[in-house]
Amino acid sequence: MKKLLYLSALIIAASCGDNKEVVETATAVVNKHDSTEVFPTDSSSFPTPLQEGVETSYIGDFEAVDAKPDRVYYYKNKINITIDSLRGNEIFGHSVVAGNQRPFSGTYSLTNGVHKVSAVEPGDDKYDGKFEFDLNGNAGTIEGTWTANNTKLEVNKRKYKLNKGTFSYSASANLPESLSGEIVSEWNNISKFEEDASTAEMITADAMKINASAVKLKKEDVENMYKGDLELMRNAIYARHGYSFKSKKMRYIFDNLVDWYIPYTTDVRNELTELEKENIALIKRYEKHANVYYDSYGR
Amino acid sequence: MKSKHAHPFSYKFFYNSFLLLLLGYFCILMLQITMQYIPYETDVAFLRIKQDYIHLLHYRISFFVHVYSSLFVLLAGFSQFSDTILKKARKIHRIAGRLYVIVVLLLSAPSGFIIGLYANGGISSRVAFCLLAVLWFTYTLLAFTSIRKGNLKGHKAFMYRSYALALSAITLRAWKYLIVFLLHPRPMDVYRIVAWLGWVPNLFIAELIIRKRLKK
Image: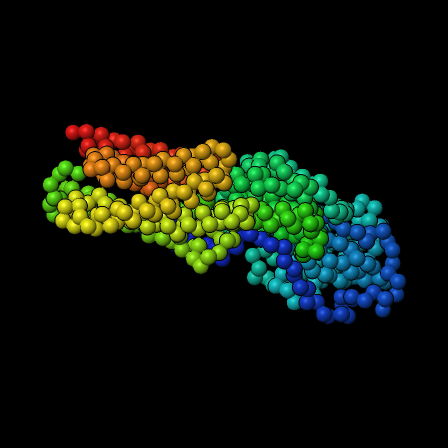
């Protein structure tokens, strides 16, 4: 009888499941940085920026200082720090990490080809803070720390050592075969790994069999795929456009395990090709179906 | 069912009550599945992954006829196998029986055959569902013609078979649930398996029951 109750609970859960959108969609983050004196949007009002050859992007791990070992996944994201311009001793740039794009501005001093930079983010976002780094133009590296304004954050200090890297969209970037066998979960409740275990799923080779940015999918291609593989296949499309993921699961995969991935933007909706849009629609259909019906009574 | 009227508190009484409760429980689940398609909607639930076929008028008609009619077929299990009803209210047995035959022969089985032609999972599941529909139609028809000829034994045997196949609506989904729970296979692999597992064992059990109860 217990089993029957359990069954019925599942059915009820499944029938309510229609509005439970587990699927991350690329969404825009509106940057409300209107403090124009610090973060210029109109560069013409300033003297011509200096060209120092360092105005480019730097990519690498954004790692928590004092990472707790049992929460290690959470404490490492891939960050893109882009230097937009230099003027006098002022420096302007922005960072893209963990689904968040934020500008920063500050000052620098130049000694022996190394720019010592101290810069702040606008301060109106929960995750804003202060960057301190050494920018070595010749070596093409950035190394330094970031300190959150809010000391109560789970992680309030991070370090990073970044290398020059330029984002460019390539439809032919494939997911690495080595992802197969990787076990991932939602990591929604990072302090309770046992709860995460219930969402754990293994990535299989299916997820990287077809590149959904390059090949038009047929229903036969996706109908026998696991939900997690479908989700990864679809998110790989966003990743090729440099989408910075909010989902911890996707961040774990792309930030840590996919070499070509560079976080570049928080909204890719206007960048998607027609082929990609059609494939996304098809994959979502099967994801949604799998999510509601795969392990429940009924179909 | 040769045994005498089931005595209250006898083993048989509890056993029958349990089976009826179980059937009731699964009928409620089936009702919930049916309710997903009310009001009429072509991009919900199972139909989300049938968009290649939903534009076909005969598919659409068959699908909704099948979904809306099949629940009534299952209800036959509550009345038609009861000795009490058969003996004390034969009229109920006859009316419900005719309804069952009409719904199966005119609605559920033919529509099942047509949607079976477009079943997910390729040729093996298509054969499974179409064969199921053909056998279901045939057994139901034979059960009807045999009672018209007064062949009680034949009527009972074919009705056991017919209803065993009707129950595949329930057992198919139960197998799916169990197999996913235990083995976590790929979704379409599960579907190909339950397309057969949903009804073949049912028929096997029906034959066992027929042998035990009717060949005495």
